[in-house]
Length: 102
Image (cartoon, rainbow, N blue to C red; front, side, top):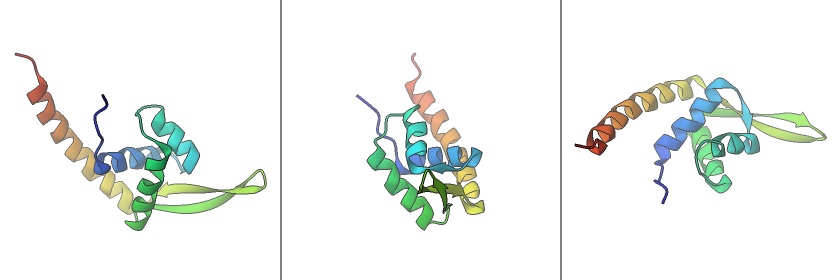
């Protein structure tokens, strides 16, 4: 059984990755899947939502005769990432309190 990840937490994971470097969709999917179990079809809607909320922007870069669409975090995205990280620390502490054995 896998624990479901909230969309807010998944947004935070993607923003944290993009805070380190720009990624194109497939490479980003591979990066996320290297750590957590998530389908490729789940990440593209996340990227669209992040772009619609102006947390990421995109640009195209040619690669082997085709264009790759890269995703880049914005200043608003960095602010959102700070907020998600703060919320995560509180959530994590609360869950750890509940899950502790007697």
